[in-house]
Image (cartoon, rainbow over all chains, first blue to last red; front, side, top):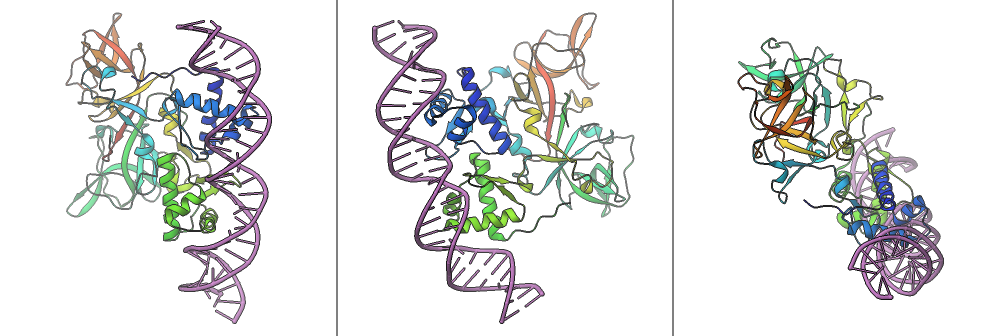
Length: 206
Length: 206
DNA sequence: TTGACATCCACACAGATGTGTGGTATGGTT
DNA sequence: AACCATACCACACATCTGTGTGGATGTCAA
């Protein structure tokens, strides 16, 4: 496990400012912007801080490129994905070859082909497929889907539901994943295809 | 619904390059970097493109700031969370007050108290709780938990399992969410608490 | 005491950078 | 024909920007 050298309180302030700027403007600050914000009258001071923070592994810089400050480690959005359950003591498993979860990669509109939106699941009609009341369904907009896909469907032009697409004799219908509910043979249109489920067990402001 | 003016193929190329650069380097390109990458010999050409794209609503720029190109709409990392199912036609619902899913906010180490890691779920022992084989369990490291919490537990110091924590007569034990399996009364230690489940229905490189 | 490190400063300089001015050419709409 | 958007170009200019040089002060461990 790579241990990070501790930062001093003043270095932390610099780090915090950079982080704020990136998350607020989507743009790292220039050296002079940092100096102005933190009350330094010399660019050399900021450079000393950036060098110290880079040496300690908190950020990465590129030479001769404006705003080329990339935050690492403690500010990473990536979460370590440890070995499977069960598969040995996970907090000691393969530190070198660790994989990381990258939610940007997984769900961002950037990587997804087509537009993506999310729906909050109401009810238990899909609970046998592991889709529970309150789950967030990530849907990619598309007008067609294959039998077997879980889709967001529009019924009667005013009700949206999440069901599995099925077909019988060249006729498509919607099938719940809960024996308590009956298949839906009404007309519907496809809004999109389920690409992921996200469930939070802690109160998050959504 | 705010409709976007269509971009021309060449404008799309510029947009794609900027998007690539941002997702690859975490840093928008300069005007001259765009020119070099797309084979333009004049900075004025790039400026014309940026002006056109800004006018059409695909990006935002700040005056006299290097690399100040912010992509809008199709490039946001945030996913729109539409109104619940069922709750009316979702693609027309409350455009102004839309909520957004922010995975950084939800799962990042930044916002979470304590360290977070992820485990891939094996088996169906928790399927009645909507936790299926192959799901990604997001776990926050902690050494204690309350009865009712789903926890990652370490058995015999070499096997990790996801179960619900329960107690009977001041004795803690692990309870599966599947009648096929029996409660586990062996000794165990708590690795962390389940804070979220993420399931992908599409092949993602993990 | 010597050295490493942290925390500041002033100033200079080359090159990067956004912007402005003024073109040319093409194609479609009115 | 007039007009507009698209798609390029060259060149100039003020300022922004990272970097280099050369300091100063204080702390703390060796």
